[in-house]
Image 1 (spheres, one colour):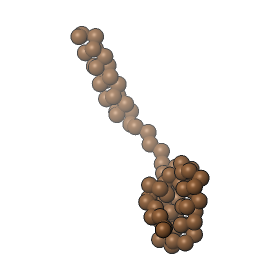
Image 2 (cartoon, rainbow, N blue to C red):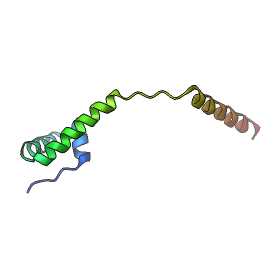
Image 3 (cartoon, rainbow, N blue to C red):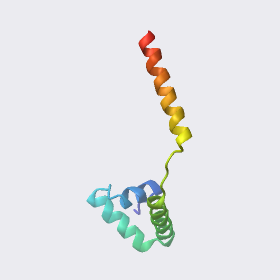
Image 4 (cartoon, rainbow, N blue to C red):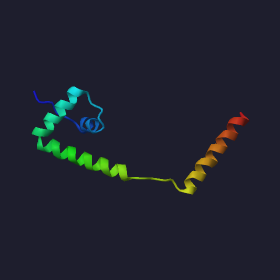
Length: 79
């Protein structure tokens, strides 16, 4: 019986989070299933793009967070 792999299975494989048995099964399936290969290649591409993303919050956002934290600390001290 051929096992069907989900995108979650492929992601776990990409992040090397599969058992050795599961790794062998996925690799065998990738050799024989063109649609699974395409899905895997898309996930690889997306993973590469995610590695290039960087995000830094604005000073305004940081200021709001810090103001909130100070307010919560003061509220806790008053109780």
